[in-house]
Amino acid sequence: MTHATPPSGTHPTPPADRPSPRARLRRWVSRETTGGALLIGAALLALLWANSPWRDAYTTLSETVVGPASIGPLPLHLDLSLETWAADGLLAIFFFVVGVELKQEFVAGSLRSPRQAGVPMLAAVGGMAVPAVIFTTVVLLAGDDGALHGWAIPTATDIAFALGVLAVFGRGLPAAIRTFLLTLAVVDDLLAIVVIAVFYTADLRIGFLGLALVAVALFAVLVRSRRTRWWLLVPVAVVAWVLVHESGVHATIAGVLLGFTVPALVMHGETESRTHRFEHALRPFSQGIALPVFAFFAAGVTFVGGGGDVLGQPVVLAIVLGLVLGKLVGVLGVTALVTRFTPLRLAPGIGVRDLLPVGLLGGIGFTVSLLIAELSFPDSTHTDAAKIAVLAASTIAAALAAVALRWDARRARTNDMNLDDLPDDITDHIGDAKDRLEH
Image (tube, rainbow, N blue to C red):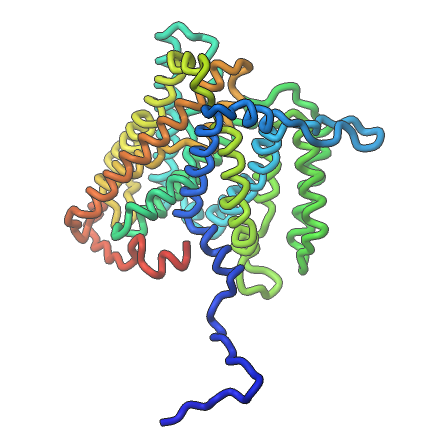
């Protein structure tokens, strides 16, 4: 048998299904394992720099102010430090992706059926309530009433970090566990967004908020049109962000509101929903740039030169116990009560023992917890202590979750893990080729 030889001067055509280098880079950055690694790397770099002989350079960089104080006759408050731009600006892109994902889950995903999503949704509520109670109890017993405003710090779960740990150490476990964790984390983030909007908003300016809602409504009209034009959507989104920022509401809320407007059902003869398309387009930037840069500026707490005194603050113990122990007790406790006393059951393939690593993964607060820590306290002592506690608790929770996941994966499983007297019939597992392709 002979093989055809390309004519002289021509080059063989590459396989049609081989992705380009740019596509491979986007796929690599979008992986949950990559996102978690970049977060850890950025936070570690910040900690090393902030405690090195060159720590003054890190402080100078973080406090460098850029941005316009006004646009024409309109005074603005956009002359912000780079640290604030990361927390208010770049993190808004992350929350836009969260908003898009929430919209998809509510309309066409795991949250569309309350019966199907009931257990993880209620587990998310328990996973927020118990840490808040633990935090409040510890700071009151310690006599630090001034720290009570930080009660919401240990209530958050970092979706990217938690899913990254699950992807690495949960190989071989049923994919339904990932869906449970995703649902729990998505509801957790939604409630955290509400908490930020309600409890961490000062000096509300109704006029700017009304104009912001008009900009969001205009974005909703444009994003539902037959053809979505980025050069129209981006300026409108920026205007909405500026107006929300000027209103006194934390600017990241603009990202969530804009994300909620993206259609989650196929329209205008398209082959995929616009929520999927927007998430696919922005997730590489969110995971590869926005989150690591925010972590870099948020995690740089100085221990040397007297900075170690913050470790004695009661908020450190309160946050660590809230994230590591409170999340676990809240998730496991509520799930046990719900499945015992209501008709709701765990999804096929999930047993109660699987919720041990899930509860520990919920204790990885990181991104949102660091954000709430910055919003909670006016003084640097409490803020630095809270950041140290978030980093320590997230590290402890991630390590314990990794051990629990490998223990869970090695144990034999029955064909009725959720005890609903029906065979589970599980075919999809974390780490399968299909799971890697989809996620």
